[in-house]
Image (cartoon, rainbow, N blue to C red):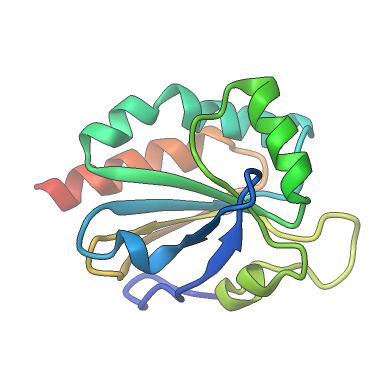
Length: 152
């Protein structure tokens, strides 16, 4: 798995509107809070997505963008974003290429990826890796704390 102080692997992925998103486009411009989640519309993933939504303004003030990634389809992400008013990009990683690059794919079981958040600086370096399947709030809380240290 990608670790703190590693260079974040670049990726491109499809969004619900059919557009492509590239991590490299944020380099030197914005920090990125990249979170991997198992599945749209599940209770834990919905809570996590909404916690990022609810604190998006705080992250924006810290010059950061949120990007969510799962193996769900772009169409499913579109429905999920619409249902919960998620104003940030959700990337469809159908073949788990991005999850594999970050080392968060599961080998077996019904959930394809682990719940992991990477805080990536404008320099492209991973400044924190947050793992917790059940303490959902830990992801947003630690991401904000990391970004505040980067502003420091």
